[in-house]
Image 1 (cartoon, rainbow, N blue to C red):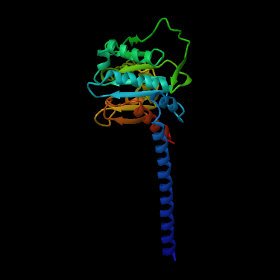
Image 2 (image 1 turned 120 degrees about the vertical axis):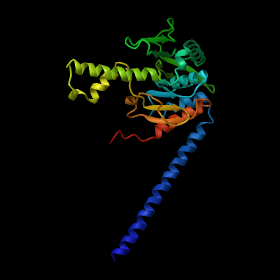
Image 3 (image 1 turned 90 degrees about the vertical axis):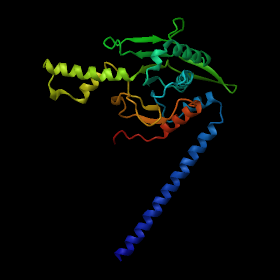
Length: 276
């Protein structure tokens, strides 16, 4: 009798799992169909529709390992981020290409912001050479523009939309700056112990995070786009990636508005339980 009950119990469990899997496939089919239908829209209208997703990252991280990469495509990605309402972007430029081409990068970004009728994008280059003073090179600030104006208007398929878009801030890091931050943080804590300002028992996550905040005074990114031959953070500060969703792409080349919107859909659909 027990064997018969066990047999029917297994059958019932298998049927239940089959039904759950079937409904899951149907759900993902309709989600994919819905997104593919939206890709027939114009690029800017796709970005406008992406603003209606259940969640859009406030802080986007971008890791670029490939060398060389096309500055216009990166500039277009920044403008796309501004359209969907992303407020902060941190670019981890592994080979330090951007800081070596500041003027070209600035003019390229300015061109795309003018074409898109957007506010100037503020770019902060974190320089390891002037590490102690945390020198930031401020770029793309138009002195004649009214800083209080945060409403832009753009035309999409003969329909006019108004969207409140705050000024986008971009932080540019490289592997040398991140390594220097780690070294200086460790040195500072060791110095405090040597001077008996703190003891080894006082070293906690909060203390280390407070030290790191001196060099990375911005929040953790909710979404990280990785451009490189394989899935890796390539030295992006790991203490900033505790709750970050990561998506990998082999190259920035060919990464357009459609791919960006697809990444936003993937982020919006992902389940984040935050350790619960």
